[in-house]
Amino acid sequence: MEREYKIYKNISEVPASEGDERILLLIGSDHLWMLKTLFEGSGWRVLLPFSKKEQ
Image: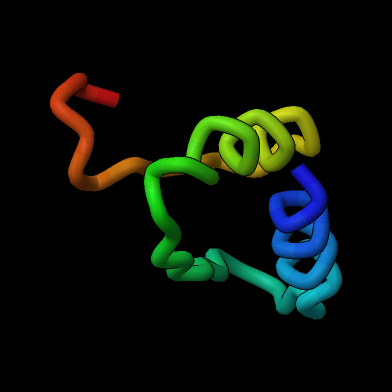
């Protein structure tokens, strides 16, 4: 969990610019659920392009 919190903190501190800004995060599946939960809880839209379910 500590690693997920560090990843979340580092990405959330990236300065946001105006308009549609995207961040590409390549992460192992072991971290995916926790990071998705953290980002969506903060109002981020998370896309999982390789998931089997439609988004």
